Image (cartoon, rainbow, N blue to C red; front, side, top):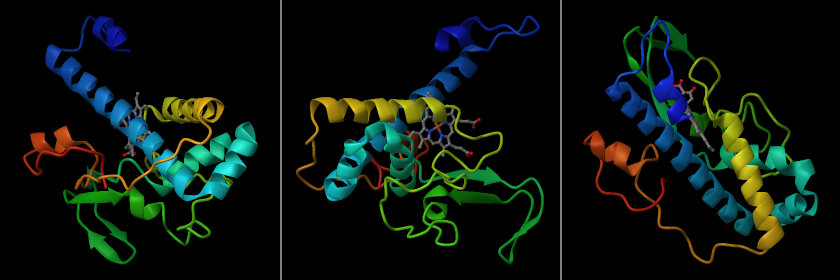
Length: 200
Ligand code: HEM
């Protein structure tokens, strides 16, 4: 993908080195940190919920799509993004003004009891719901890699089932104090400290 971007030319124009570097950085973080954490979360969830493991691994293909979606819903790898409002809006009675910054808490939306039945339960058979916001809430910034990510996670668990069906975590993970997910992202913006493991 990076090669395609390097050689891409539209109306005689190419991406600058800086633009390429930024996009490469985005892809690296967006495409790596997320799936890696989702898979770790998934292994932990299947350890904590052996019945859910039995259901999924008992009929893998039938439940693969909903199980992957449920891992991302329940233990979302990206907790939020920031947006700047382009117009005034009233949200649930709260007036918000154009130009204001807002945080989109995907993690909160994914546990919304008005949308999800038993939101705090991990259920690999949960019907797919378009309101699942793990990959964003729709619109132009919806995750570019959602299809790839879903496939990567499903393939990884298919292999775990085939080779190491009893794989499980043996201790509580050491969680990083991160509001977002990526330690270097936080450090570069000067609002974090050196972090060593995955997000909370
Ligand atoms: C479980 C895995 C993943 C999760 C949970 C995830 C989550 C997200 C979320 C929440 C957003 C913001 C969406 C929005 O604000 O509407 C996003 C954007 C993005 N994701 Fe992912 N992502 C995952 C995997 C990937 C992968 C594998 C790639 C690429 C190889 C990728 C590339 C991107 C890019 C490029 C954007 C920015 C899109 C834009 O702003 O136009 N993501 N992702």
